[in-house]
Image (tube, rainbow, N blue to C red; front, side, top):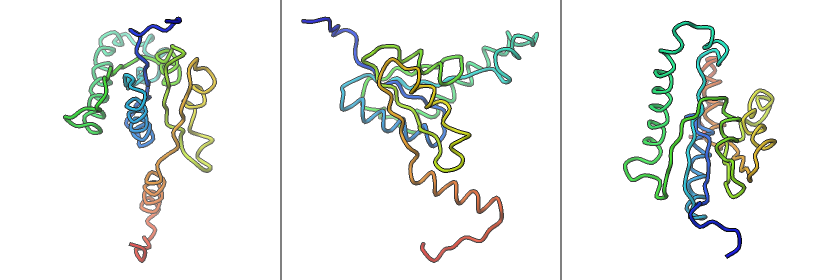
Length: 176
């Protein structure tokens, strides 16, 4: 055999936050892991409120770090349960929580050349200027292929409905 290490299974690393974009990325990453016969690595990155500098200044931060980490783990478990239920994803899975900014945490986790990093691509349209930072960071810094998954069409519809509700605009129900 050439330099291939069969004990190092290929991994599909997916950024998970609970947002609709990350759920779409998780579903796409799961399908990819099945096709590649790879391990699925859902990753939730977390930071203390106000970031690490604020946490270092706080005298109670040491006590709160464990609680923040517990809450991050609880959020990841909740998202995975909601998406996969009791059956699981159908592939080997290794869920990870990482302290740090999402882009850096994902790039650090997907550190092998044979990994595939799957992230949500952010919003479309004018809001794109204010979103998509994580996917841009991953595309610029990852050592492995990156799949930036566009938002689901349902997400655009939900955003439009939310906007109409926020501004108390009437809904056009003729097409329903």
